[in-house]
Image (cartoon, rainbow, N blue to C red):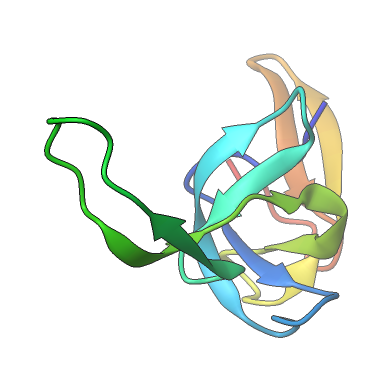
Length: 104
């Protein structure tokens, strides 16, 4: 189970983009990876594929990152934090470990 979901703001805690923040666009729980906007940019050399209109040349896009390289940014205290879970009558909710506020 991943503690980071689509729409969350995350901060990179290791790697070339350490310290950068962005929003999660795509979450892939089976692969334990997420795509973050503006982070882990790679260049893809795109060629023409038949008669289909595609963008050709060198395209820069975001590549998936492993969730272990990211930390969720708490919307209340605006700091990267670990995530805890709490059972409520409505179900499980995520909780910030630093300020003890409910995240969603």
